[in-house]
Each structure stands twice: as structure tokens, then as C-alpha cells.
Length: 233
Length: 233
DNA sequence: GTCTATACAACGATAGAC
DNA sequence: GTCTATCGTTGTATAGAC
Image 1 (cartoon, rainbow over the protein chains, first blue to last red):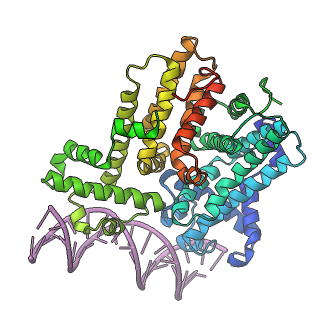
Image 2: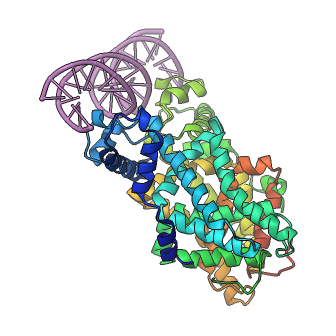
């Protein structure tokens, strides 16, 4: 599968995400007209990602934010009760999307070899489509582990567990020959994160997502997970 | 080489670093007694790393900071002229250390295979000793590329270039068989960064630096860089 | 529903006593 | 050299006009 096919299949848009957020908490939002509310949420979210990914969420002032999306300060407060709620709103949504898309792509796939490739490709393509979201989520989540460390750690380990499970299944089935599935799962995750954290670098080198996906897959296969011939199914 | 041997050989201490910083800019620091100045700089730097790695540099107030290191707000301003100077001071020093240690460890090493292993181990051990520094540098540097993107990008690519050069040398010498040295170099860097960015994870799993180093090395070797037997020299 | 105006707290930074 | 006290600014958040 390539990026284009993935996009058509999953169809994750900012608007769809915002509508979902709105519906899931319509009670606590002052605005009652769904169409209007969603339109403004899209503006707010996009502006937040743009500004926060430039200077950091905390450094971004709400004055900056409402200027960026052409609203007034008071008007914006109809959509969240304080700045922190805006943060958690975006973060939780990001996590929910990852979970849904990943499990959706993987249902019904039995062969560990195939599952591994699909999981890697899906995650890369998803982070390609929603790069600002992934970048934001990664950067702002970091500040939590040290202080609290609950859902943030869970989020980090969630994706990793997907890969860990596939690898263990492959080892049990005799398809893979790796001695440390957990370490390999961690390595896969690190490689996937590099893609969306340093997209500027890969873009500058004109490396496509598909090429990067093929590279990661071949690297893991070379280490012992799957056929050495590699595949580009 | 293991961590202990590395520590004895390089001897990078916070104090040595702070003395160096002090000397390099003694003119712009109000304090004239070196011993005192260095002692306070150590306190300030350690406190900054602690607090900034918890909540982010921008979210850390200077009041928090001076409380943490037992000084007064006014007293602290003798050591830097504003908050941003404190940031760049720490960042630039971090980069300088990496450059010095890495090139020091690699001088005189000819065999690409050996150089690759030493480079990986040195970087991991260094980031183990100065983990807060690395974490801080990574996190706070990120906010620059998008906005400006000068020294920050250079810093990111500097370490990567070390690995890229070794890999290319190995390919030219016929020791490695990899088609994309730049991608492999990027992957190595991503794996090294994962170590200091998520040390909590690896600590929880009781994975030592040495074990992680051996894993990374064997992974790269399996992909085509060096002997498949692996080595733990 | 969205705006302007404003309250109030917290911040970085400085001046001047000791 | 370090402290306390304070200035001016900027931030989040709310109240009330439209």
C-alpha cells in the first residue's frame, strides 16, 4: 500500500476530527450550532498546532492564538474553559485516532510478517497525513512523565505494544528469529517517530514516505523479522 | 569499552563544564571570584535542567529557578543578562561537548567497522552521563528549526554526519554493503536519541547502556555494516 | 455568538540597600 | 556579591455591551 491508497481508505481530515470532538463534549461547549462550532474548532486547532509547533504550547499566548485564527479572545473562550483544556483536547484526540486507525488496519491480518509491514506503513502514512498533530503530541506530552506520568506513558507504550505483540507472535510462530522483541519494538517506534519529528530533514533529502517505510521494514527484516528478500506489497 | 571505562577516560563533569563556560565569558559575568562563580553556575545549571526538563524552559519561571538553587532573583542576574542567554549558554555548551568527545574518541581509528562501534558507544555513554543535558538540548532546540533553523539544524546534522562519513568510508572500502548510508546514519541517530529521550522506559525495563549499545550495533551490522558475527570489544 | 473592556496574577528585569 | 523591593509588561480569564 502507498500513501495515496492509504489516504483514500482512511480519510482522516481535521474537520472530521473536530466534529467528533465537538459531539463528544457538546454539553460543555457554549456554541450550539454544530456547523459553526466545527468550523471555528478547525480554525482554533490548526492555529494552535501551527503556533505551538513553532514556539511551544506554553510560549504561545492566547492573544497570539486568537489573532492567528481571526477571532477575539473572549469569543474563543466559548470553545474551551481554559488553556490546559485545549491542550488535553488535542492530545487525547491524537491518541484516539492512532488507536482507531492502527487497529482498523490490522484487523483480520494473521501472518506476522504481513502484519509487521502493515503496522509500520500505516503508522508512517498516518503521521504523514497528520504530521503537525503528531509533532505536537510528542513534544507536549514529554513534559508530563516526569511530573505525573500516567496517560502519557500509556500513550507511548500503546503503539509500542502493537509492534511488540506482532513480533512476539512472529517469534512464537517461528517466522521471526529475534531474541529481544521488546527492544526491536522500541527501535521501530523510534524510527517511526523520527519521520514526523524531522520531516524537514527527509523532505530536504527528497525521501518519500514510501521509501522510508521500505527502509524501516527492510532494516527490521534484516535483523531477523521476516523474509530477507523483503517485500513491497 | 563499557560505561565505567568511558567515564574514567573522558571525565566530563558538570563542574568542569561550568568552569569552562565561566572562563570563556568571564568579561560579561559580574562575579570575579572564579571559585564562587563556578559553584553558583553549577547550581544554576543543574536547577535549570531539572526544572526545564519537567515543565519546559519557557514554563519555568526565574522565581522557581532561584528558589530551587537557593539564591535570590537579583543575585542570579549576575550570571546572565537575561533568560534567553541562559538558554543559549546551556545549548551551545552541550553541542561543544558532543563535538569534542566524539572527535576525541575517533581520532586514530582507521577501520570503519571499529569506528562505527566506537562512535555508537561513545555517543550513548556520553548521553548516559549527561542525560539531562541531552534531553534539554533536544527539546528546546526543536522550537528553532521552524522559526529560524540555523545552528539548530547544523547541530542535528553534525552528529549524523559523523555516522554518515564512517558508513561511506566503509562502503568505499568494501567493508559494508549498504546502498543508502545517509538513511542508515539517520536511523542510528534516531536510535541514539531514543536512549536519552526515553531513559525512563529503558530504566524500567532494566536495560543497561551497554546492552542497548550492543543492540544498536548488531542491528546496523545485520543491515550490512560490518561482520554479522557482531562484536563486543 | 462574538465583541470590547477590564480585572488580576505572574513574569522578567532593575535599582538600591546592605 | 547578594539581598529585598518594586517597576512595567504580558498573560489568562471574565463581565457585560452589542
